[in-house]
Image (tube, rainbow, N blue to C red):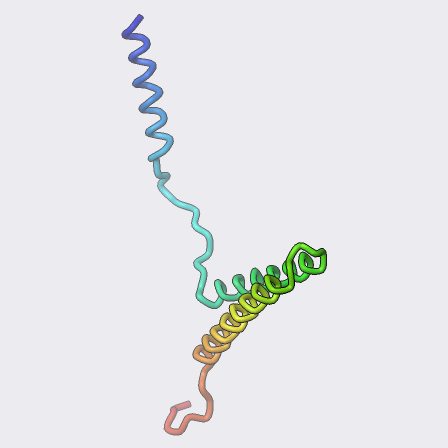
Length: 103
């Protein structure tokens, strides 16, 4: 009886370890995100947070001081994100009209 119980315990332990640590031959990974993609997603999240904050303030869930503080913080974050997006887009844009450049 104890040998059967021991065998079952070992079998269950090995099965669990195999299930947890087994890596299939190929992993399905999503598309690689660029910094611009990340920033655009973050911008949408910040805008959604601003909309939610405005709605909750109008519903009376936030006092004026807290609302202004959070709103200012979110607006500053949005401005920083937009500035970085613009900087990345300008850095990636080809420069035209450079002297000495070959066509």
